[in-house]
Length: 389
Ligand SMILES: Cc1cc2nc3c(=O)[nH]c(=O)nc-3n(C[C@H](O)[C@H](O)[C@H](O)COP(=O)(O)OP(=O)(O)OC[C@H]3O[C@@H](n4cnc5c(N)ncnc54)[C@H](O)[C@@H]3O)c2cc1C
Image (cartoon, rainbow, N blue to C red; front, side, top):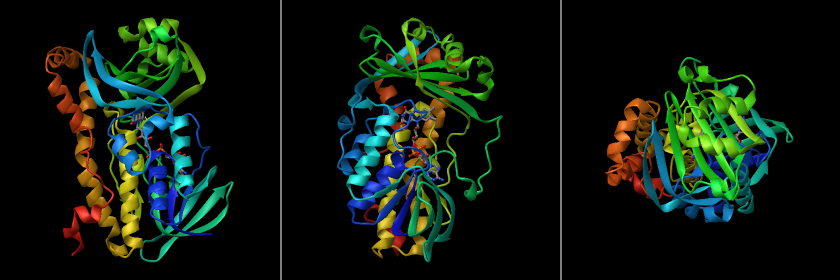
């Protein structure tokens, strides 16, 4: 098997890269180890900034289904603040979003191998890569370039050390079935010491509750499955009490993970361009991971195109992509870390929220720091020609 570009992973980053490449006339194969459209651990809020990159891919988030979200709020220790989102964000189940994005990539001409994983990979941008595929599709795949969009868990062949449990966070997501009268109209983060619970409506009768807790707070984890674990944390959040009493948990929606590390950055591995969480996982409190995944997928695709079209020498690819990636994402990862640090300390955040409620422009400015500028990354070479001398 041969292709111009191998994309590893069919999450938002991989699907964005594959669609961008296919639309540019490049032969691209996207390999996904799991099933397409399965439940994923995620707050399922798609920030307004994602709209720029989806539009550049010829897509509109409204076509994926879900719910438009016009406001975002934070609560901590009885205090709260809210800001309007204009344009609105969107909330959509990741099972739906990922399937929609993968279909869009395939419709543009990308080949998708689901239930297939890349078990080994070697090579470089000058001489090409050889990947060993396992699963539904087996064998050797030769690719001129590779984009690694495999999410937060690096494959073993990359040799990246696992996270120390002391520094790692845990997360849990579940959908609650509720009556329309209990459906909130905004996305909200509810802080408790050491963590927070995000809530957002993702359908006319469904809310996503997504918990993120630092290891020190996870002592509250009760035995007895997802419902008991969530209940232990919801007990710290009075704003969710009434909703929790009336709601019914949808067991098939539950996803959990431990050993999470946010903010870690490595945009390349050798000549493999890493996109989405594989390159750097933003703290979920920023609600911008999906938008970052889409943009970095497009950025990686644009850089790969530049090599294939001989506008960029293969031996400069990794350095160029790293610089472009850092310019685009490094600051927002730092701001997302600060937002996270504030939210997991509600004792300090609560009084600050009282002040911020009177200064909505400050909230907007803070939020904007965790987000990308609304420029387009389709032509990183045109944006930064100095590096090509
Ligand atoms: C608790 C939590 C809540 C979050 N909430 C939000 C939110 O509300 N809004 C938001 O914007 N972001 C949120 N995020 C972040 C967001 O989920 C991620 O940033 C986003 O999913 C990254 O997309 P991706 O394509 O990089 O990775 P993923 O979506 O993880 O996709 C990677 C894919 O690669 C596949 N794969 C892995 N290894 C291989 C291999 N060797 N071979 C083949 N395939 C492979 C995986 O199966 C997977 O499908 C949250 C994150 C967490 C942890």
